[in-house]
Amino acid sequence: MSYLCGAGLTRYGRHEGRSTLDLMSEAATLALEDAALERKDVDGLLCGYSTTMPHIMLATVFAEHFGLHPSYAHAIQMGGATGFGLVMLAHLLVESGAAQRILVVGGENRMTGQSRDSAIQVLAQTGHPVYEVPLGPTIPAYYGLVASRYMHEFGTDEAGLAELAVLMRRHAAAHPGAQFRDLITVGDVLGSRPIASPLKILDCCPVSDGACAVVVSSKASAAHRVAIRSAAQFHTAQHVSVTPSLTEFGAGRCTRRALDDAGRSLADVELAAIYDSFTITLTILLEEIGLAPRGQAGRLASEGHFGREGAMPLNLHGGLLSYGHCGVAGAMAHLAETHLQMTGRAGERQVPRAGTALLHGDGGVLSSHVSLFLEACA
Amino acid sequence: MSASNDTPATGGGVAPTPSGAAPRPPDWTRGGAGLVYQVCARCGHAWYFRRAFCPECGAAEARELAAAGRGTVHADTLVHRAPTDEFRALAPYRIVLVDIDEGFRMMGHGEPSLTIGDRVQCGFKPLGDRLLPYFEKEVE
Image (cartoon, rainbow over all chains, first blue to last red; front, side):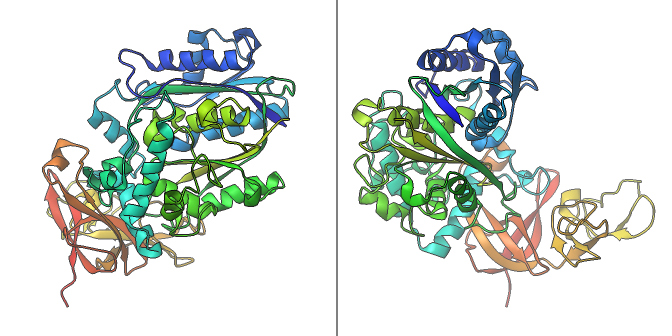
């Protein structure tokens, strides 16, 4: 058993003049405060990567910068799945006894630390360097391809996708740290600038600066603790050209493994935090996992099913689509919000039932998958 | 011809491999006007991303073959926001995933009007100093 004992989340958006290490340090400070720990208490450090500060030893660099002397530290890279992958690893390390109090940190100045073209080009490198990237695709183009097939198979339309953007914005409006807080309508999404059909700019998450950190610990007495019951991964294929199916990516298998390991089923989930890099990403993940029937995610969103008062509250901070996306920390914000909800400290965003939560993240083009199942501690 | 194992950009020809053994069909990823895929001599699996062994059974018996370039559109997107100046000059451009009749899927550019289910034929269009696979509707 391991416990999520603290979380720290910066606001996402523009942090002019602040570096990867500045942002990571801010989130790490907040997470340690929340966990009532000091730097000297940390014996494990796990980091992801930063596109604005590529380094082969980011964890050691951050340990030196922040003032940590961990007995276990390194970075991992799983694209958008990195944040939950780090938490899974921390969970396994605590369970194995390799470390007792692990700080997990992600963050970067992805918005202000490089040009927009540079950010788009770096991310497009998740494609194949010989067979895909030379054709001029972008991340939205890979997802546009996926969306075209998914919509063809299940009858989802652009308005259905838009409902999820509208929902994420409504949730973000209640969070002071969100990058975008002005309410939008389905019409706004449909009328927004085309990026890679069928995706418009409001179907896409923004590029943000920001950071998030959490503490995973063996300590069952920590004040703000949530139990990490299980974690699972699944990997289908890296490249969209060769992924065997554009409707079954492995998210369903991954969450089923996590739920099975916890001895639970989808019916036991009270709160969901699902990766939402694009409206189509969230649509596919919800429907492949089984939190919505195929082709129905948009309808359920429009009916309030995923709202704060709905049957399955989803991404209550506004998700990547509206809270923002700064790389590794992008999905970690889902975790920080889940931690707040499960410890009853989400203020006006608090939902009445947050005893269990299912989190799911993906990296690449729905290439790598990580699921976490959390349970509140009485 | 040089000792390069790439076919010339003019395409069409078949360059000898460095060993002088089996000829290599023209391949757009090496500058030639052709589509190359591989087939496992042991299990018959066909695939697109070049490697020295079969990703299905592991046999080091990968044969390079030329595909005729006919197939069916599996997915499509029209890219408006291009990643570089080179592609901005083309935008908006259509990118497609095509199920090639020989049994593999590939990414290419295509006519703006292409949509899922269309039968297509692969040709090649120059961009800068290279060739891109470009799909057009198959002529009946």
